[in-house]
Structure formats: C-alpha cells, structure tokens
Image (cartoon, rainbow, N blue to C red):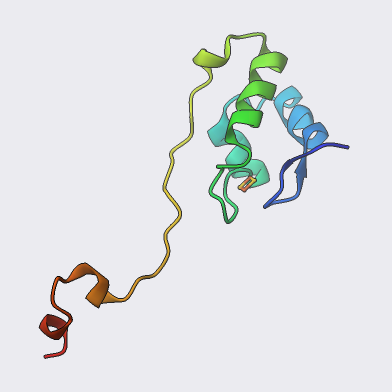
Length: 90
Ligand code: FES
C-alpha cells in the first residue's frame, strides 16, 4: 500500500480504482477522493497523481491537465501589509 496523498491519506490503489471507474482527470479525482485538497494543497501529491494518470491512461504526462491551484494561505496581521504600523491603528 503506497500512500500518494499524505494529507488526505489516499493510496495509489484507491486512485487507480477511481481511474478504472472513469475518473480521468486530477480535478475529478480531487472531487471524488479529496486528493490535492489537504493542508499542502497538492504540493506533495499532484505530480504523483499526474504520473499515475499518465501511466493508467497511456498518455504522456504533459497531456495531463493540472487542477485549479490555489496556494495555501496563512493569516497575517494587517500591519504586515503597511509600511507604517501606525496607519492601521486609527
Ligand atoms: S499530499 Fe495531497 S494534499 Fe497534501
């Protein structure tokens, strides 16, 4: 058993099974298995999933469409966006 998406605890076998059921894009796998939706937002698994899709579908990896990607966000204080902290105190 090889874990591909560590954030969502999804194995290669689960991904291959869904591909065999007809889910043929990373976005479809994302919706059905939640891969790429964990804390790292797919940094740790996206390219592995593309490789598995490429292998299972028999298409070059360059032809595998990448999913919608949103970088992980981290809250920052508003004053981090201002050159003067006193601008935000009033
Ligand atoms: S390893 Fe898949 S979302 Fe983080």
